[in-house]
Length: 109
Image (cartoon, rainbow, N blue to C red; front, side, top):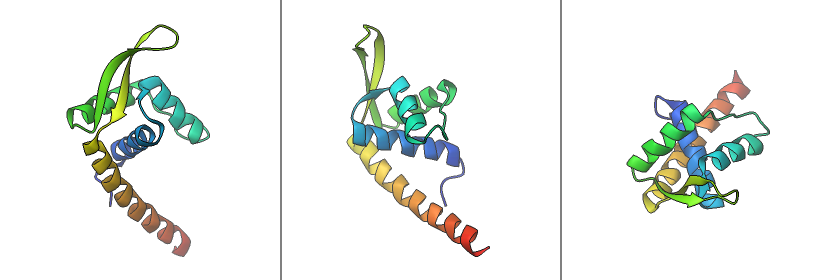
């Protein structure tokens, strides 16, 4: 089973996966990727994303630095750390098991 707050765990998994596969991103780009890649099935509100990014930064899963965007705006850009890659691997395994269990129940109910 995933941890009790599965919405938080899912967001962590999505963010860490994006940073691992796409490289450093700012928060707005992370939210847009999640929305676009899910065909708009998932929407990430700022009130959820930025606290999650700060929490992951405190845990050492992501690193952040201020950069200047192409439109000359300051933005914090996030990248996954080695510790974050370990967390990503653990969370991906947990979610794979959880989703297989849900699929079995849906098929056999």
